[in-house]
Length: 176
Length: 181
Image 1 (cartoon, rainbow over the protein chains, first blue to last red):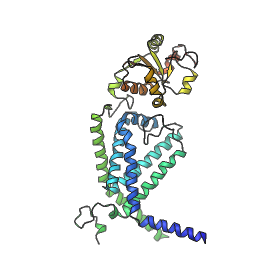
Image 2: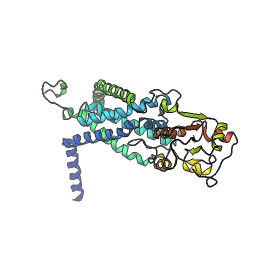
Image 3: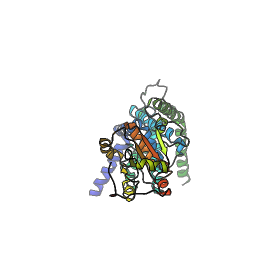
């Protein structure tokens, strides 16, 4: 009896996640806000973010400054695009890729035994050092990004700013 | 079974073609972010060089020009001068083990917490000698950059850190022997 009830509940939640328009909207804006928030300290202290990136020991030192500056602005642009609902497919793909790269970077550093500070939301070197356990936050973000990307590709109309027949962004598969 | 495989292949093909169709937008976003980054860097007080060459990442040229880089012998003369404050930028645990004579600890990992006390006790015009672990260590330059940005005017860095000091057979102290500012 109780297992039936549980199954019904799970099915209802899954159904709601599949059909609800509020979930992708909330997720899109939520992920956008996370990326904008993550970029703020990096925009204010790009030099300190370059130091954090140096500590990952992944990129050649010669390009770290350029990469740090670009990454901070990429995060803010992607965040704003997601919040505004502009080019959502491309932005969702990029935030997913960035999250994968970030998890990969932290994992490589942890495997090599480099004790590093995250640099995710703050460039302060005094923050907590990363551990395998602390990767759950990025794992959660990655799941959300993957879900948003899948949804953006499955139901592109849901993310379009305009649905009118003269909309130049209208794609052939949407024409009935 | 075959129908299932064909279905998966078709689905993968759809995903790949949909992703490829987004490439122009992805490139436009990446290029836009690069332009914004370059423009913002040009007006940012730090003005980082985009390509650093052999220089330390995160270190603006105007800050690097203000550092005085000294060898162990020159550092010894600075350590002997009571006017100069010797600053150890390594982790506190290593500072406790051994450090240069009269050195105070201002670790890079912990700068935010310890700087207010440092600023309250050390005048901005006091000459500072900073050092860290060795040749590959950039912590002294990182702390030096923060101190110069905060208004300290006379910052010297011991080249090759405490390694160079030890190689020159110069004396070291452990915590408790001497630790005043």
